[in-house]
Each structure stands twice: as C-alpha cells, then as structure tokens.
Length: 358
Ligand code: PLP
Image (tube, rainbow, N blue to C red; front, side, top):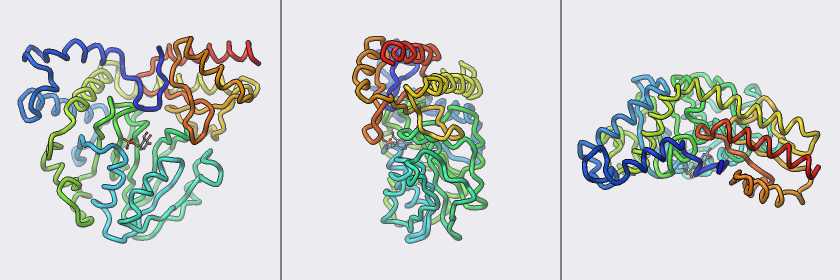
C-alpha cells in the first residue's frame, strides 16, 4: 500500500529491506546492531557515519554541533528555553499552527513567551507577513515552525529576524530541500517523518549559543553535556539512530536534497492541481504561497462522502488519509519516502472518485 500517514510515516522501501537483511547479523558480526553496545566499535561506526552523512546531506557548517537525542521534538521545544534563555527572559514565538502553539506551551514556566505573530485568527490558513511581526528587543531567540504538519502551512521564504538567533522546528520538512543552515541558531526535528522511525530527534545547534548560561538544569537536559558526550550521555536509541543512518545513505545515493526537492515539488504540485481542478469537489484552504509540500490537508465538499472516500481509498491501496481530528477531512502526507507513483495513484483515485460521486 501507499501510506500517507503524517508520522510515524512511510520509510523508504530500500531501507526497510536493508534493515531486514541485516537485522539478525549485522555485517557478519553474528549479532544484530540493536544487540550491540552503543560504545562498541560497530555502533560507534554507525553513529559517526550517520552524523557525517547528515552533515553532507544538509551541508552543515563545522561551527554547528549535531545531536541525536531522545524525547521527541516536544522535549527539544522545552530544552530550547532551558539552554538558551535566562530565567524570565523574553522569547518570541511565531505561531503558524498547532505545533507552534505546542512549542510555546513548553516554555511558559521558563521564559516570558511572547507571541510575535499568529495565524490563529485566520484559522492558520496563512503566515502573517514579516512586516506584521512584533519582535521583542532583547529576546533570547525567535521560534518558528518551518512546516505545520496538521495545518499544512509551510514557510517558503526564511524570515529575516536580524541578530536574534532563529530557532526552527523542522520536524516535518527537514531534508526535503536544500537549506542554508547558517541562517539558524537551532534546527530540530523528530525523526518520524523524513528521517526514520520515531524515537530519536536531530538537533543542530550553532556552537557559540552553547556558551549561554541558560537556566538551572540537570545534565541530561543540557545540550552542552550532550555535545561533550557525543549524544551518548546515557544509552541512546540505537535502533532509531541506525535506521536514520540508512535513510541518510539512501538519500545520498538517490541524489541528495536537490533531487528530493525536485520530487517533492512535483508530488505536491500534482496533488494541489488535482484539488484545485476539481470544481470545488475537493478543497484546500491554505493560501497558495504557503501551502506545504509535505502535508496536504483537503476536504470533500460533501462531508457525507468522507467515509466512502476513505474506504474506497483503502481498497485501492491508499492508506492513512484521514485528516487530523483538529481539522477533520483528509490529509495526504507526502514526505521524501513517498514515491511519485504513490501520489500519481492518489491523484488518479481522487479524479475517479469524483467522477463516480460528483
Ligand atoms: N513539531 C512538529 C512540526 C510535528 O509535526 C510534531 C509531531 O508530529 C511535533 C513537533 C511533536 O513531535 P514529537 O511527537 O516527536 O514530540
């Protein structure tokens, strides 16, 4: 089946096959990689290669540290304030959907969280223009959500926030296109969309920010300690790290982020064309300039057709299309690992369903 789940999401077939082939005996060692010590030479090699490959994929400059951590993206949202803001210091949040709100919620105990701009009044169907943002002088950082997984809203241009470090949640769009990492103070992402299975998060931190005092915190909540400990302060999620490493190698072999950017542009354009060309049978409500290339929420004009749509899609091998409960309707998540054939099959199914039910 083609799996349009928003996350955990589909993984590249080639990666699953490779993991299956070496699951019982990793490279002739006589044990699975997930049975070996994280400090042994085998896993240390896997870990080092994963970091090196991600650095190559994303052209990460040397003055950025790369961490592979537990706790999901939500944990990183809390750690941003603990590590990079003084107690009670201001931090600016640009809220463009559900996940921006979540990020804000994590830090209320630690900082003066300030909503610099919000798309909520408009139902998160657009991104407030930069000219309308009210940034706080002396803020520790500005936080944005690069791609809103539920609302299907994506920054297509990076905002200029001056000298204040820009922190960005890239959970649902990391490695989907080339990115100028040097524009950011911190980039973070849960793995379960574009990087691998849920259980590991990638955090990319500009090293000079690690000199900030931040707030009283335990070692395990301290990015500095994680950098020093090479993401092995405690037992890391080796299985997830290993699989993410396979995903990076697969992406490099396929042509890197430039290639995926081209595929993602074609896939999302086809889907939006199908929706917009349906005479209102389907609709996407997001302003065209900020429509997500990764998550395409859409609604059927006649809600009574939602159930038959999902049932018939499933029969056609197109699964996990039900929209998030906050929005209803449908959502097609089309991350890097979704083949173009999957989106072509979905578009053909949508046209056919409209013909039969329209
Ligand atoms: N941020 C975004 C953009 C997401 O899509 C998600 C989860 O889907 C999260 C944060 C939360 O991630 P996690 O469940 O890894 O904490």
